[in-house]
Length: 434
Ligand code: GUN
Ligand code: ZN
Image (cartoon, rainbow, N blue to C red):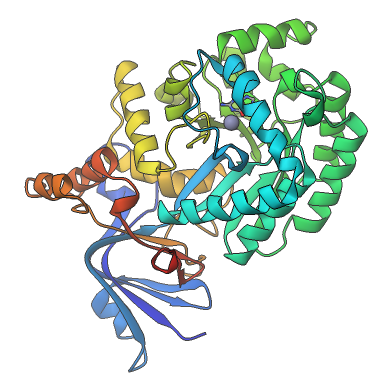
């Protein structure tokens, strides 16, 4: 594969920003370049320096005056809920029972799974998202469809079939043994194949019996390199029901802890209503709290306390949670995250936002050696962003006088229209979509 040179304003993060003035947290090149070869970034930096390394006649994609950033990362999303988005419900449990558990039954049909998985990845690409950690349905065929469609696009993904054996419709139940066997077969087929990683996916404590939780723990012990993803402390009724189902445990997290499910490859969606003990245990084990702001507002679940968890040393991700969430856009997601921190009386600055969408989420997924920056040798997942993409953005852009103001404009007014191009493993995929 020939080398390819991208030209534009290049931005990536090297550390978590400590304030909106913290220019040591990022690299920015006003006339910058990123050199790609064989799906990887060979060099990035000033146009003059990078272009000097390139043979005459190298293809150049001139993206000036747009921004070139690492691809956006979504660490919690349900691909099987594309048609659940915008379902009118009072709260989480009503939403699950009335819409979500009904919709997910359609994934018993592999053709339906393949069609939605294709639409899912095209939608991510349109929104500049190049990596996602996703829940499939209980049906192994849905996970097959998910990984096959990701592989077709050479996308870095984490995914897994839900394990659930109670408190849901019969048609969505596996059993402890079947959930174990199906998950094991999927791990053996997909984990580490190309850019795919598997996540053992007990949906949440309510839909797994203690026997199933034991099997989940057995899988996690057998495959320590595999991820675990589940939901934690999203809604007060959910927490109360969990404690009824698991009365021997002192809190929600302990249900998972008891089975050995905590660790730096364990992704806990929502994590809103946590005790000091739970926060301490998460920090100690490197477990990841994945906040889902549009979902938490839409379902009225609560306000994720960024500073409390961050100061306690808990690893944090921020995600869309389609279809409880209401947008595929990581800009809209961080826009709502910003508003939640406003309600918490906290400042959440635009540098921190773009850090979270890129390197922060890559770190949350233990993937920052591979993605999340434009560093040499990393995989070439890249987005090109236009902060003047719509007439109202262009008008506001006339007042912008700093990089952080431009990022804040992108976050507040931007959506998929601000994504000019999405490169996945070095290939420009957005412009190829119909
Ligand atoms: N808890 C268990 N399942 C789900 C789900 O599908 N979405 C959300 N938001 N919370 C859950
Ligand atoms: Zn979820």
